Image (tube, rainbow, N blue to C red; front, top):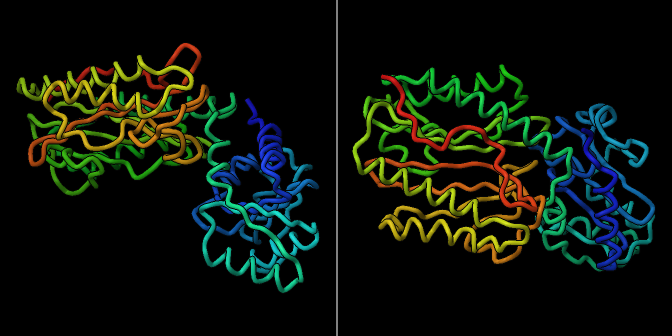
Length: 372
């Protein structure tokens, strides 16, 4: 299903009209990807600027990306794309002057250097503007996913689930974390992923007590847990899943702790409904873990939005005291981490529907004990 980029452009124009903006300048890569629909075109370089006013949509890029944009932009007739060899600040200032814009919205994430140069060059052209901040409105527009986005997210998750099945056959004691990660990422790329969502976390034994552990040369051992936090990416949309597996039977303490995070996960998921307050969902999981006496070992938020970015709005976290709208895609990922001993996390990514929380993952929530 094609991404509905026309509706995205209209949403931005409606926002500008509502706020009284003559124009806006956008440099955020995820928002540019969202507006253009240009899949697998952008990388980490901020080499692009979008200018929007009542007359249309302009994109300034350079020769490294120009042909890729021409080939991949959806609704190409709606865009004017150029690679004029000039700085992005000068290009945006020229657009502002030509459009006679007086209220030009800027993203909160715009680089200070870019903002300063833009204002200076607009002044040099004899123009005077107000520069209100977008206050995260670009990210807010991206919260609710359209059907094309959901299709890409589900495909990314399908590959991620396949990888979990494969890894449960592959993992054995004596493998290093780096060896496990290499196999995990190779499998995803060989089975339909066109990128990895993020640097996969593979942590064994006491290393798993570090929620964002970096894989190393440590060898897994029988009797330990192996935590894998990873995801496949498809056309710039990401999956994010964590599963914890056991290399052999576990002591009661570990089994009981896992039962707690599973209950926290599933109770939190059951509490989700359209426009639920994100902090309230976190509180459900927090209460389960606190009641089990493990509260001091759960220190992070319950979940974050996922889409073009691996971390985006909204979230199920204590600081998100706002509604989470229907159509949002958010993770649920409670965990407990006992320093020097073990760590575990159970994470799904899912969409908020009228009926509640619909996880994309099909991988079991059971603590799998692998044959050793």
